[in-house]
Image (cartoon, rainbow, N blue to C red):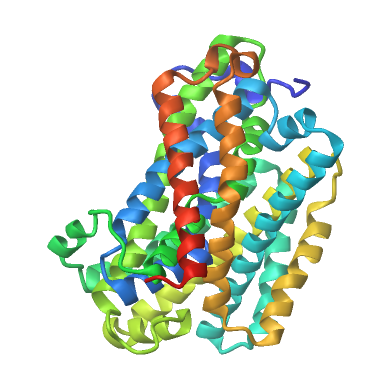
Length: 416
């Protein structure tokens, strides 16, 4: 509870002033449009058309709920989710919990560097390993901006990149619009064999991302501070709803646009099971300008999301291990696994999809503690979840766990 009030003391109550409080959710939303999303969504659309549109719609609805809960936890308690878990767990359990959280954060970071490297290869023909190094260096500059100029400057930079991402992946739909009837039919929940379950788990892991759950509580707290005045906290939490809704709506539109673009322009075309192949098909079908815009969107996605992922990893380590590693030092360390994958010649798109599947298994470890904590009056006070909110949270967690269990069974039994 030691964090200063900062802007919270002066939090205005008028509706228009809520815009001034927006920002943290847009940083967290970058996690929802990272290169892992690109790989999973393009693969789903190119291979199965509009079949899995419903997965993205459901995942985005869950994401809105989850990110609001995370931000509310930070504002109501003055602590991040990792900090609260670090205080509640014993030494051994705390280290084990950190290990799984660090694993999913590492998988995220690896995916984002790989995606940025692929984008540089598509745009300039750079070798993947060299591209990975450049993405790592560029992300250091973004993190240095956060360290030297503060969180608001970092938020502005991320917002610009988010806009570039949106243009990059939505523009193709204006050239070749999807079939509205088929897209609507994709809202009906169904699967077609093991591969579609695997893809759904990957899409879910790429949309509801564990590291964003850990991070958002810290972002909201650090931006607005903690106020002892319940009325001020209430105003901030209400304003946060608009921040989360706006950010996640934009991220959801971009995600669905990726799948619709693949379903309308890449269906049945050979080689679209990789990002490079999908880029070539997009360029062939929609023209070189759209191809370049697509690649620029992927580059912005990789650059922004790897910076946010590194920030999240530092938040996780600081909260659970009470160890503060400088962001730039951490960036250097976490860059190594991605460079190893790129140097080993592993197919980038496959690495991206598998990393997202791994993330889906990490979601319950972040989501279940979050729902438990936000439902407790001794933690949240008057800001504890209402019964409908609790039901929605537990329903989301149950659906995610069930999907992962089905994935395990289908994968190891070989049923389709």
